[in-house]
Amino acid sequence: MRIAILAFPRVQLLDVVGPADVFAEASRQLGQPRAYQIQVIGTVPGMLKSSSGLRLAVDATVAEHRGPIDTLLVAGSPDVAEVATDTELHEWLRRQAHTVRRFGSVCSGAFVLAAAGLLDGKRVVTHWNAVERLAAQYPKANVEPDAIYVKDGKLFTSAGVTAGMDLALAMVEEDHGRELALRVARELVMFLKRPGGQSQFSAHLAAQTSERSSVRQVQDHVLSQLKDDLSVPTLAARAGMSERNFARIFRSETGTTPAEFVENARIDAARRLVEESDLPAKRLADEVGYANVDAFRRAFSRRLGVSPGEYRRRFAK
Image: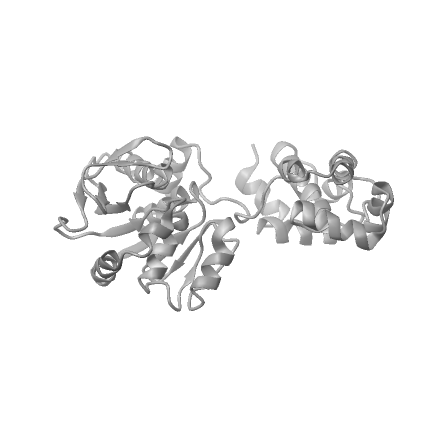
């Protein structure tokens, strides 16, 4: 199967080499070095300078390319807007979309497909930081903001950067089955299927985004005292603010509400406990501050997309 990855100046290198390594490892696991033949197609000839400054060799250009393509992926870039206006490229993409078995994008490469009209009426995803912009610029696309990757017919789109590897792994599973995909995932130290969505960030990392000391102090308290009363009135009093002002400032500083931050912190801690212990659900709920085990299960499933029991079966050490 020929895998063609479209690249261009200032391309995000991992958008190209991440999926390429997944397909290459699948070929190695199959014992068939040419099971997946990977080709980089450039918008310009020669060596492309990536966004990191490293250079990438092009096998062929859009103008020069000949021969059938099984799977076509469009990589992303911090400067993808420069490529998204290339009308000749759009025409080439539309022609290829009719003939390939499947096509798609990694990260912000979705903007290139959208500009070519190939996302109209389709369920799609892109980098979490660009989903609102994609939805606003291309309202005919049905943007799913939290997915790691989305398949809609022959179209595959992925979230940011490393999610392109998840996308490629899903393609390998589609082609050769779960057993091979699992071997590839183990070799590359990947999840076969990641828990949760791309907006699921560690609460400890999220706490580093606030610049206001009173909000940071509240966040630190939440992270260290998950069993405490962490209601908005209690947290507002700790910050020395009215509830309304605290909620407004907290959201402005962190991009999330106090209640969402508390839930994220509790479920992030619960996730680690599930991975590292065999505690039953009731004990897990107690350890992270939930008095009601059913409320805990609902919050866990809402945040991670699976129940605590299913998460343990898939990801426990």
